[in-house]
Length: 235
Image (cartoon, rainbow, N blue to C red; front, top):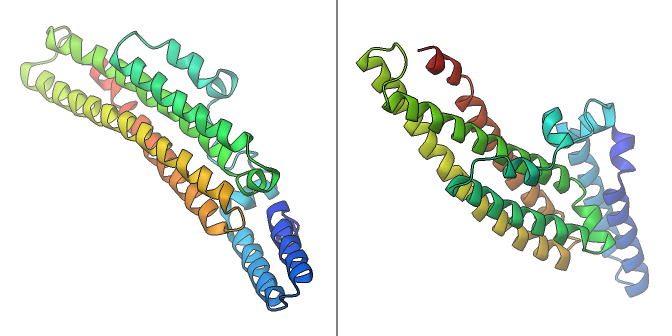
């Protein structure tokens, strides 16, 4: 693991840049600073569970892998399968921002792309999970509509309890979709800052931390919405 961390392209690149700069500028105090930074990066990489999974071959993705359907079909295409309406429009607008963030990374220089090599899988996973949440919201709205019409064999109290739960889930999902769009706009600005200051590893870690938080929220929301669907339908 240490050897893989020591040979990680971004870590080697930081080491090479520091050594070259210290030689060119003859500012020799940069040399020990470079070695200290390199050692810290190696240490952090070796302890990073995502990097460990990549090295051990447990996962090729730095984020939890999307479903087979998501990996085979683009999130934009999945979004077009949603019913026409406000939710679909919001998701499509958010995915446009997502594509702009991806394009900003892919159009950056080699150093920036190396720094952000962990960000792209996280971005793709977030886009897929955003559509998962939208699909779950649409299903919840369908079930809520059925409950309002009084279909099924549930009692009044049980129906109202299920309806209240579904309406709360719908509001939560709608808010998360809006927040995701705003966060992706912020991430695009962070990519620009990283391209300007690619030698600052803190910025890249901050970007990945934001993406991890976004993925965790979207995944948790889609999972909490799905299990309650079947009991509601049975009722």
